[in-house]
Structure formats: structure tokens, C-alpha cells
Amino acid sequence: MNNNISLKIVVAETSVIVRSGLAAVLKRIPNLNAHPIEVSSPEALQNYIHLHTPDIVIVNPTFGGWFDLPSFKTDHTRNSIKYIALVCSVIDNNALKEYDESIAICDDIEVITAKINRLLHTEEEDEKDSEQETLSQREKEIITCVVKGMTNKAIADKLYLSIHTVITHRRNIARKLQIHSPAGLTIYAIVNKLVELSDIKDTL
Image 1 (cartoon, one colour):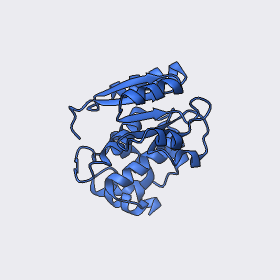
Image 2 (tube, rainbow, N blue to C red; image 1 turned 180 degrees about the vertical axis):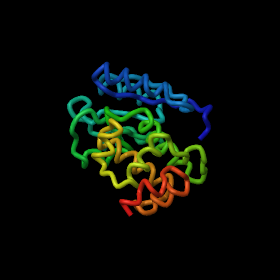
Image 3 (cartoon, rainbow, N blue to C red; image 1 turned 90 degrees about the horizontal axis):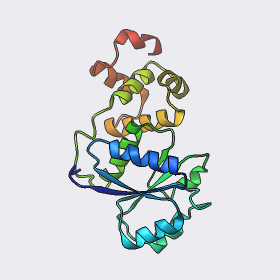
């Protein structure tokens, strides 16, 4: 991904605290060069999309009572726009299937960065950006916990994360490494000196 490209990201959320907070986080993401546009009502979102084509729209599924994404996409048929659900409350997973990605209000900046990068790179599958595939420190910590036999809940408690965030990290780890089993992760962790054999002998 070309780091010089500026990204127009619309943040559609009625709560000024959540909206402005997410906008501030987006500006802090390294190499993203994000330009968040805050939108507080469905009407404002409609008006903006009529005049501009953002790269990403981050919208609360309960925006305006309930945000009808399929109808919105029908009205605004620009396939280049990616839609991310901003999950601030309990939402039926079926409602999230229409979105390209979802981020939760409890996600940390590493998770948000990974999700946005993955979303942007879906259009660049042939560009194998080695930097994108580098594991974050948090992901290495989670691999260490997994190979020690810890459950998602135990990992979440140890690292002060939500279970949802742990699952997201694990999904990103599997995608980056193309390893989909604890046994495979164990071999990776030993080879890359993330753990000592003595640390995991009880779980083998």
C-alpha cells in the first residue's frame, strides 16, 4: 500500500464522544494518512456521499435508529467504498454480514490498524507487503499464550483485553502466518524463539 495516499474515512455516529474519539484514533495510526470526516446524522451522510467518494465508511449499525446498509448501497452504487460496522452495543451477527469489516468500541489501536490494513489490501492481493505480514508485539504475546494451552478467556484476562479482541488477534495471526492449528503455532513459536520447549512441555 502506498503510504503517501490520503484516505478519506467517514465516521458516521451520533455520539460525539465515540465519533470524535474514533477520528482521533484513526489519525494516530502509523502510515495510514487518514483524513476522518465526522458525520452525526443519516442526512449528513447522504449529503456527503452524494458529493464525495470516501475510501471507507465506518458506521454504527444503529445509526439513525437502524442503518439499512443494503438500501444505502443500492442508492450509492460505488463499489470502491468499503463499509465497516462500528459496534458499540450487542448486535446480531447476521446484521454485520453486509459489512466488509467490523470494529468494536473496545478494540485497541493495533486491532483497528490490522483490520483497516487488511480491508485495504483486499484490493491488492498481488502486492505481498512484507511489512503488513509482520506480527505485532501483542500478536506475539497471544501466540505465546495459545501454545501454553490458555483459553481465549484466560488470554483476555491475562492481557486485559476483551475476548472479542483476542479472537480478532487470533484471526489476524492465522491470516498472516497461514497457520490454522495450535500445533502449527507451537512449531512456529519454538522456531522463532517466542517460547522455550520447557514452557510448553505440559501442553504437548
